[in-house]
Image (cartoon, rainbow, N blue to C red; front, top):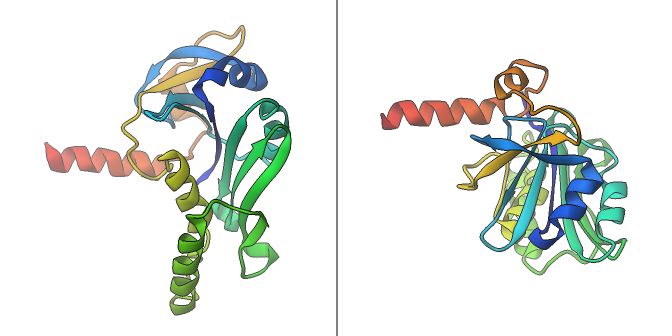
Length: 201
C-alpha cells in the first residue's frame, strides 16, 4: 500500500498559529510520525513539521491562511493515483508549486519559480524516467525537493522527536487504538523499521 498523507513546514515560532489553524494541541510523545492522525516535530533548522496521516486536497487553502505572516511549505501525496505536490506560500500567495499528477499527463506541472536546487532534481529524474517508462519516477520530484529544503521525507528515518496531536478539547489519542484503526499510511515504513531492528538485534 502506498502513501496517502500530507504535511506542512512552518517556522517553529509560528507553532501557536499552526496549532490553531489545524485545531490541535499536544497529546504526548510518540515513536514516529505515523503513530497518530496528527503529529509534529521540530527540525534542527527551526522548522515545525506537522504531519497529517491523511491526504488533504484542500492543503492550498490551508496554506493561504497559514502563510499570512511568513513563508510556509506544504506537501501532499497519494500514491494510489500517482499524485504528489510540493508548494510554498508566503503572505497568503503561492510562491511556487511542483506537482506530479499522472492523470494530467506525463510531465511535471511547474508553477512559479521553484528553488534553484530543483533544476538538478528535475533533470536527473526526467532522464531516469526515459530509461524506465513503466515506473512513475517523476513522483519523486516533489518528495526530493521537500527533503532538500526541510530535511524530511516520509519514507526515511528522520531522527526527529515526534509528538502526537489531539483535537482541542479531546482526550489524548491512544496510540494503540490509532494504529489498529483505519489509518494505514506508513505501514510499510513501520515494517521496514521493525525489520531493521531485528537485523540489528
